[in-house]
Length: 370
Image (cartoon, rainbow, N blue to C red):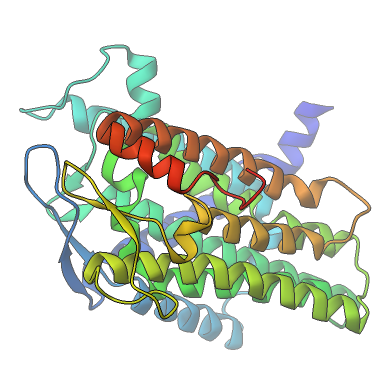
């Protein structure tokens, strides 16, 4: 039965391969040729700083305009991505395996390759290079910030279009999920430069784990709320709508407010926070550890805001099934693991200064709880 299901539903097709090949190539062309500014990344272990082209905002709108034009002219159906979801998923998985092989060889064949474990399995999975590039085209930044993220939004919109085709309307929960996640990615591209300070960009080698996660896992699982609502449509009361909008806004305010606050503090430590002088710990190594404002409430208060938004998206699908809540379960595990990893890294880096910081800001993610 599984073999029959695969052959009729999830088997890769040339159509799906053409769709994804065109999609990946289009995004790569935008990365190379679309206008954008070049900025320096974080300092590497050898003291150098790589140049990164930031043109996500332009590429985001150029992609949406292109998709709207293709659908409006009848060149492509609005439901294309939903209709091809299963074969596309298989194609992207196969592509991710092959692409990870390329990344493995890219790092191994470099004249001055980085140190690796020497184990094919580990190096293939974790990667052999921190910043695999062709010229100034950075594969890791591209895959983290382009094909998967925008495809996630387009999958949502295609699923919503399918609901409209079947019901003659788009339900309020579907509209909310699509709107919330559209705004999340819109906000991401508006603050695109923040990606250069993330752990993935600064410390993780680029292998199968990140490549598959960026290209396959993210877009094809993050759309589960929309997919569930397509097959289980229902309507929300006005109070339900207001509650979900408010909850998402609270999460966004914490998430974005905290990130902006830390960014401004790094630019100017003397700048007031919530109308008061910023409080911080000056470490022996030089960096300042912010202990006031949002960051006085928890050491990763931005994660708390992110989790509130994630929970809101899941709640849009109601409470009848666990599937829509897959995302908040997975995301909670991911962020708790990240916080633990970051905490261990910083404890080793800052020593007694980090102990003082933990005493000043005792909560990890959720104020007064965790």
